Image 1 (cartoon, one colour):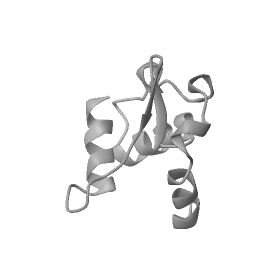
Image 2 (cartoon, helix red, strand yellow; image 1 turned 45 degrees about the vertical axis):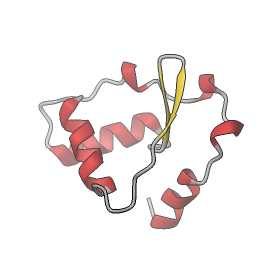
Image 3 (cartoon, rainbow, N blue to C red; image 1 turned 180 degrees about the horizontal axis):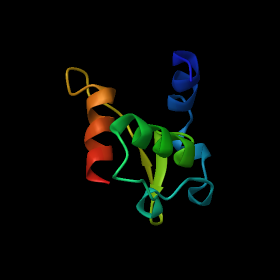
Image 4 (cartoon, rainbow, N blue to C red; image 1 turned 135 degrees about the horizontal axis):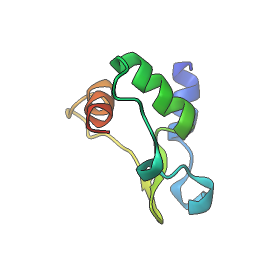
Length: 82
């Protein structure tokens, strides 16, 4: 994916999305035996939009604070915990 494609996914309005149309990340299955890059690919393939997901019946929009951890670090931390 290009940076522009990621920006387009980030720009999706939270209010315009029905919860049922989002991937429930609590049900994702990621192979922990794979290297981090493979897990990253598995996650992105399964979830579609990494910024807007569902956990059970709740919509979640992922945002990052200025000066906080990078998207890369946060994503790695999430994958290491799945």
